[in-house]
Image (cartoon, rainbow, N blue to C red; front, side, top):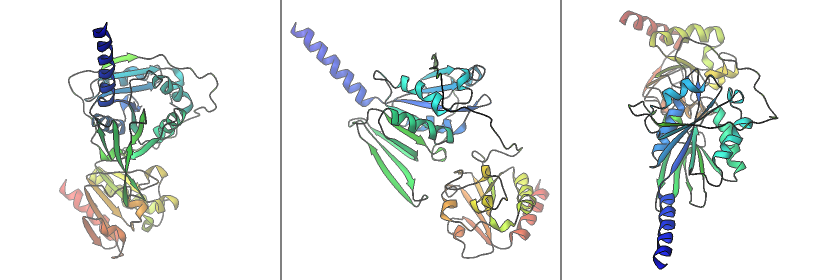
Length: 349
C-alpha cells in the first residue's frame, strides 16, 4: 500500500517537473497561395529557442490547407502539425479563428506558449485569444529565452521607435505565454528530410460572426515583396510627386532586382502606395542592402530599417539624421546620382 502511494506521488512529481521544464509551443502559421508566409517561418525559429516541442497550426479553406500542409510538414523545428479546414477559414478573421484557439488552449491543453509572426492578422487574433483566457501577450519580440527551473520566459522588444530595448519577463504564474515575433530578428526555418506528424482538427463553427470578409485588394508587382526582399530602394519627400518617384526609383530598383519602399512622408504626400511604407507604422525590413534616397531619417523611419546589413543614403543635407545610421553616405542631388547609378549598373550587366 505504501509502495503504491509513493509511486503515485512520484508520477505526480515527474509530471509536474516535466511540465515545468518542457515548453510546448503552438505556432499560428499564415499562408498565401499555397506557400507558408516567410514571417511564420521566423516564428517557428523563435519557438524552437524555447527548448521544447513545437506544434504548428494551419487554418484555411477546404482547397487551401492540403497544399500548404504538404510543404509545412518538412519544415525543420516542427514536431506536429494541426490543421483545420472550413469555408469560414478561407480568410481567417479574429471572430472565426478565436473559438478554435480557445478550444485548443482549454484546461487540459499541453501548450505553454502561443507564437505567431507580428503580422496584421496575428496582431488581431492573438491578443483577442489572450484576453479571452485572461493572460497577457507580448508583441514584436526580438529575442526569447526560457528558463526551465523557474518556468519563466524572458523577451526583449524595441520601444520608443526602436531607441530603447525593453526586457519583459513572463513568470511561471502565467500558464500560457502569448507572443508575436519580429521576423527580421530571427532567421526563417528551412525545409528538411523529416516530416512532422499531421493531425486534423474539426472546425469550431461560428454561426453568427459580427464581421465578414468582403474582398482583398492587393498591389501586384513583378518586383520582390518588400517584407522579404534582399535589396530595397526607398524614396522620401524629396522625390516631389508620384510621377517623379516612379521615374527615378523604379529603374534603379529594376537594375538591382530590388523592392521599392517609401518613407511615411512620401506615402502621405501620395507619391507611393501605403503598402510600400517602411517605418514604425509601416513595414519593418532588414535586407542585405537598403538604399535611402531623399529620406531625412526621422526616428519612425529608422525604426523600420536600421537593422539592414548595408545602408546607403543619398541626401543633399549633410546634417540629415539618416547619415547617422548609414554605412555609406553621399551628400549629393539624388536626381543626378540615381540616373548615373542606373547607367553604371546597366553597363556592368
